[in-house]
Figure 1 (cartoon, rainbow, N blue to C red):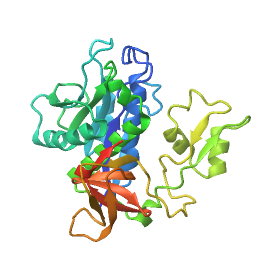
Figure 2 (tube, protein in one colour):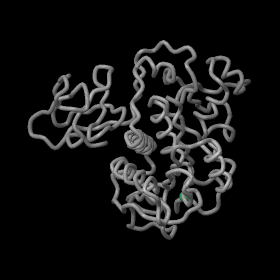
Figure 3 (cartoon, rainbow, N blue to C red):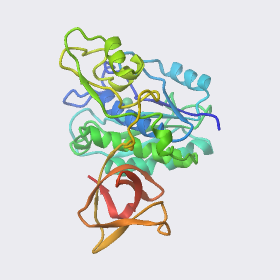
Figure 4 (cartoon, rainbow, N blue to C red):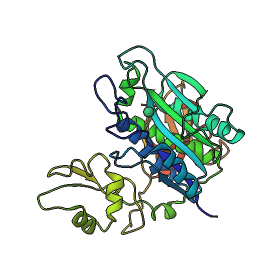
Length: 328
Ligand SMILES: [Zn+2]
């Protein structure tokens, strides 16, 4: 099977006027988290590739027409643009998540929106404002199914609590990736295959005399990987003491011999039951029971598929019915 390419962007650049919370937090920083969460999860699917058509460092505000053109030239399967909303730019009690397609979308775009939106609502846990239609440039075309996500309001006193939690945004991105993968019938890579795209969760603190090149040599990873993994540090803040992620997104298989390669994307707590429920091997209650779990138990999750939470249990992917877990 040939590669399936998903095109994403994280909205605006860091410096784009407006596009910030009343406290001055930049929309890009929120957008970049969910986009990164999407990318990290999506590349765990077989044949899935992700290309960002914005500047992943957030410095350059790539023209919208240029993004669409690049997406078309690359042969994107779908376009997903990650944004966060604002109402009047002053704190208020409004809020919620919404998913946009163009006005009079074709069936493919609408189907993508229908697939993505519930994952977004689940990931943020905010008010559901539904699927809407506007002719914004990155979605106003029929080249490929295209949606623009507004993950919550930066000027909402309730939404901002969620937006300030990086892990929450990352998880939302991962859940959107799961929903998109399911929509296109993708399957997860096996553990062995995963080892070719993931390594350990290493970090490195910059010391005097370091360059990106020297760090890339030290860890045997491409410079581009360091850039991808550290948009908030490179190139703005490459100074002594800054922390770099080495493997948040891994570009290739170099030096991986770690078998514990399933990444946690967040945590759920078991609820909604009096007694216990089972942890299953697959996403069906006819599959093997791997264990029991009770109200109040907590699990790291690696994703969410077809009404099930994918939990990391004894170092492998296992499944708990979605209704019995809530994201915390
Ligand atoms: Zn925006």
